[in-house]
Length: 467
Image (cartoon, rainbow, N blue to C red; front, side, top):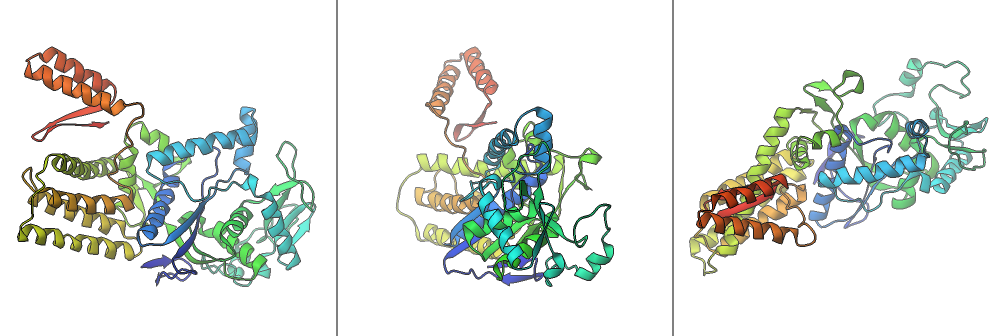
């Protein structure tokens, strides 16, 4: 398996630090509002990377943080007359609602900045001891010029950064390049006690401290959006390696930008969409499909046309799945002919094509193409008279490969026997139609439609799905 490493600007064979185990960290959202479509892309990308590593047999510890100490959170909480914790608690819960709808699995650990203050303070203390940071008036700053490799990730030299820097009025830093790892308390802000006085951490130090405390000093993969390369990830490297004296992450993986109708997404341009906004018009499973139909490092253009195309593609996959399940329930379990056995054996070529695509820097676009090739072949070979083992073999492979991508997944059965109630209504409708009681049949269809249940009359019988 090869991954494109932003640090080296090349695809590299993935070799974990510890055989059979992968330690991976991805920067999560700042929880002051609903996540936007730009936040959704890295969440989906690193969910799939984690799933694929597990598919390959690795034991993956995946950490995705929540930034719950930040200027935006403090300002929004003050505007609403609530505490920063109350605001962040609300939007962490809302994040999980959106993540669930996008098919994103929970990380192994979801640390919060506010719950790792001891580790943050400890790392800052080590930076001061190592001559990498200094205290001024209750704040602590990282000395960028103390770290010669600064700029390696973003391909910027310290000299270039220095020549482009502006010195601000009343600046207390030794150099305009230096950045805060601890901020002295200001009135109206939450604060924590520290050796330098009351205050709170800077943005960059949090990921360094949480990653190190949970995963160890050196991790396999650090991920995030391309916009985080500089300064956030550059600063993480400087902090982590400045504190421990060893490499922070072996592979840096970054996803590309999202454009809206071919224009970069921006609040100022009015083309900014939250995931919750999009969910009012589209099933978020189609958004996940859209994200994965492009290679993760490529920029993608988000538009209604593209989402509708993705929804149609996803429907072809789910129709195959549903038809195969129906056929299995009604298929003859007979002995296979030699040709039928040979066809089952031939399905391996789709797994090979899928694995080859995913091993090539997580090429989900080509992996999805391999799944569609499998579906086309199965649709051509299988019908209502096909033996059960043939249908089961095709469906099992489809389910496994689609499951790694988190697409065409069956929604969990509703609690309290809800699915059984729906099935009973459908059966009643069928009986009404046989008895030519079309009024009752239409009433049932309308009732189910009002509940978001779509009925599909097919030659295999009535199928249904939640809209």
